[in-house]
Length: 297
Image 1: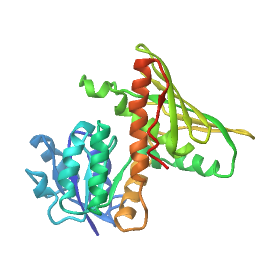
Image 2: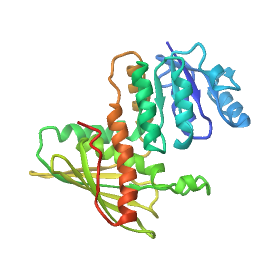
Image 3: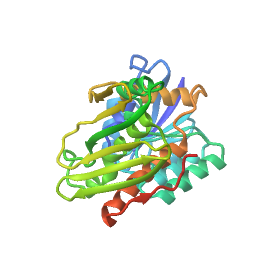
Image 4: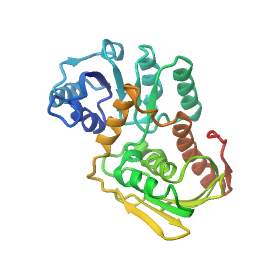
């Protein structure tokens, strides 16, 4: 039984993941148990601890990550994740960091390097990477000649309040760049954006293999995510089922990662998906194509 500490209580992801391991009858309760929880807001921590049946409600991160086997950083905003990740690193246990890993590329690189240098396993991903539709499309394309694609969805959140962080390209945009990468592969080369403040970002993403993917990150859109791939034979695609079991698939993969049965998402892929968002912002601001760093070999 994998003993899990949950860090962060300001996101619905706390219960989305925690509910899967809240007791032996939960979906993944035979494999793991959420045994401790910490959050910056004491009242929210107590409420979610009661909801999830967690006895150890801790006042500090250090207390929450004591005597556990794995850590899940499931707070809402990426701005807080660097410090939480560095604190979690100390105990040397596998860590899941929700999306986006951080809101700063230098912090993201520093964090991944710190984990790698200390031989501590780190897994960071959008849950949409592991949605059934994404994985099925990825498999269907394995022996096909892909000639292009389109990824569409929102980048800002409109139903969780007025916090300006909800309106940034990173909040939901990371779902789109990680799905794009999971379906079409890594090795981004450049991005060119045509945009308007009214509607969002329209980006042409080029890979080093010469593939062009059109990425539409729309502003006034409700939660709607779709991916279309064009091959030399036919078109394949999906609209994501937002009631699907992507949280279950993600957590199951993380538990496999903890047990050494799955390699996890390569950290260079996590970094590249985040870098693409910064490149999209820069291209939108300058009106010029932005060359990617080549994080993925």
